Length: 259
Length: 276
Image (cartoon, rainbow over all chains, first blue to last red; front, side, top):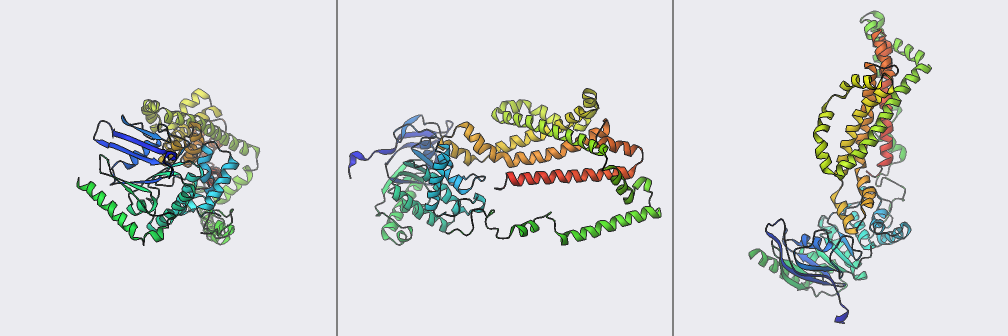
């Protein structure tokens, strides 16, 4: 690997954050996500992992202490290098699947023809060919989140920020969508910062997993996931190395509770 | 996961034919569903006619179906009837359009500047709690016996209903949609026209539907109080001259009008909100 070519997609350095002069939410957090790297952020609920993600997305005002660089610049809303995905699909119910998948591109100024052409291709890629004219109401939860994935990937941003995108799905659908996300990421190779509370999901998808402590959130462990790619969710669950990494993350989390 | 329906088959997962869906819809016209109603209404009218003919109750006070039918037969084809109906409808529609348009603007201003809403709130509450028809005598003095006073009364009802539904509709917009727009860097105009407004339409529309029915109601009430034209004025005249058949006939006309308004609004809602 040529180290000089790897640049950081996200750099967070010594960030402290407290809301309204209350207790600290984030305490001395530093992390980096390299270009093309998939990094998961896990930790107990309320540990500040979503806050950290929202700081990177520019949804929260910058912290008083520490610096954050996203794609080389300070975080800001609407950075064209960044796509953001939420736990709920946030599809617009008055648009059909095609228009929803095209929505991100349209808002960012792509023409109708061009964005619909790409949305069409992405919908096919996420397994929704033939559902272009269906409204969200007529789609299942899994299909809606597939549409949201199509919208996120259609933007073509080199950095994805994902806040528990599969957190609201049932277990089986979640596994299917993890497989889909693996495939989409392995083909495109953009950087991902992925917040989740699901350890198995973190191990299966990531190159690295960062473990946060309970509030005030600190990064307690940085675990490299040395599972070969391309991966398959189904096969991973039978893999001894997968279970060893899972157990190791568990022990890091438990250490966080004890402290 | 493969496509099992063609792109035009909406709503999805409803595999019944268009006709079957229409028939299953409540309120759809079907002969076998209509028959019991026809029998019931015929029996009711027959009993009423019989009671009036036998003198069981006084047709001077309670009217009789044949008298109502004769009134409708004699008056519905006349120009005078349609002119009265036209005045009433025009006053209701004009007050609806003016009231809704201004209310929409004020509702947007309230959302944009919450301080303005907080300032206006006590006055709005007081005005909205007042029975608006009590203002009719005042409006009649100010705007005369013509349509001006009817429009003013209608406006005073429509305005408040539509302001509150506009504010509620826009405030109720899904936060996730707004977050998505922020992360995409959408311009405020884009957010408003592509997300906020379409998201608010269902609530605003239910306000509009209510406002139109109220507008017709208070315009007729104002016409009953004092007017030179209109169905309400006609009703007051017929009542005062003991023409009970005429009163009942006009009440039936108004009922038909109310149903027609609701039907039109429902049709419009289906067109606008087919995605719901």
